[in-house]
Image (cartoon, rainbow, N blue to C red; front, side, top):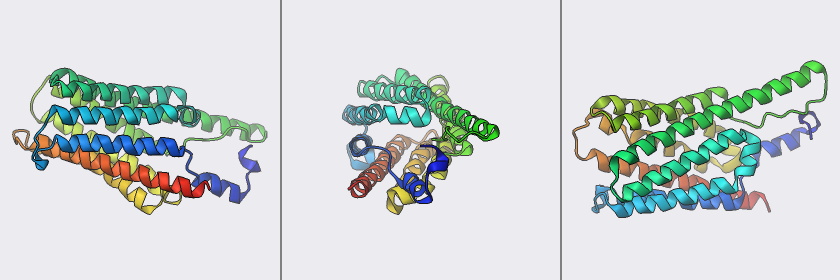
Length: 275
């Protein structure tokens, strides 16, 4: 159905509908929760210290999140573009391998993989912007030719949101790679700036999702990237502080659990709206 054939009520329903399946949302919530628990287990704030167990748990969580992405790949490919989704899935795979290596205390290789994973994620978001541009050009071509609009813009995020988040993830990844080769504040500052930019990109997109997933889920979705972005700031301020590693894992754990809460609430909303 073309855009012009939709009634205002149908357009509103489509804009508020949760497109992810209940199974995908549930798996994403479980995966993020497991990842968050793994990071908290590795935090000295819980009296356990950084451990291989924490990295192993985080790896399991990453695998579950990856499964949720794969189950949703057909719909995501249609909306965001196949190349973008392939890159995002590769991002999740690489980050999962990095967590697995963390369980074996393979620090240097893990740093390279973490950096490469986030760079892949950033490039994936940039490809979403490219996909949106192509859809908009097709829509304008239909309009200029006087033909009924057959093309549809399926990417809801703005170009500013996508580019900001993409640049942020790339900077974060480059900083993580830099940490494997150089000490000091430089790479850490790069990661902090990248994390903040990525968080801004995510927040600028999720705030309009209140009609779809609810206010509490959106608040959790906003707080989650903020904690992720904050995870590297203590290191950038004082790299010599031995407690920074624990704070980093604590922030990552809380951020992941907030993301899990957002997915769980979206899952509940999905069940209630699809009856």
